[in-house]
Amino acid sequence: MTTADRTDGSVISVASNSGFAATLDKLVALIEANGLRVFARIDHAANATEVGMTLRPTTLVIFGNPKGGTPLMQDRQTAGLDLPLRILVWQDEVAKVWLTWGDPQELIARHHLSDASASVLDTIAKGVIKLAQAAAQ
Image 1 (tube, rainbow, N blue to C red):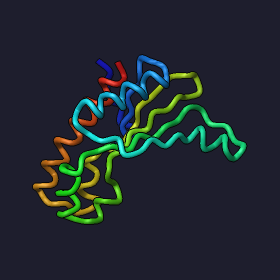
Image 2 (cartoon, one colour):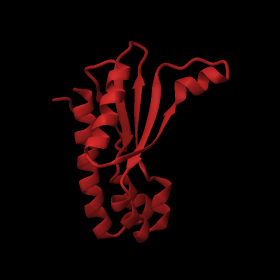
Image 3 (cartoon, one colour):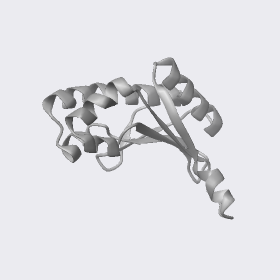
Image 4 (cartoon, one colour):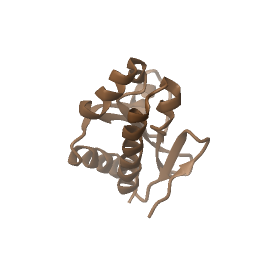
């Protein structure tokens, strides 16, 4: 099983065993299969090309479920700054593909969320790592 690497305590990365497109497609399929919604995909490499610059494959997947996120924003509306959730799929300089995201539990301190929200975020954090690890296989 692929393990998560916490680079600075708040950013988590998982190395993929597949190429960029396959990893991205698998992640999106897993998100949808788990009853979550993909709200957007931002292709940073394509955006770079539009302005005459180059960037290795890099796509941000924005996803979530209003049933999970709304209670967090009801607790503190500022949590909406960090919702929906995001996972970045990117290829490094040696063509290794990674899935990287911010630890959802960081939202507790950042937005001064209640204990009830902390419990929800614990569940969300465990779900995100499972999604990423499955997409990395």
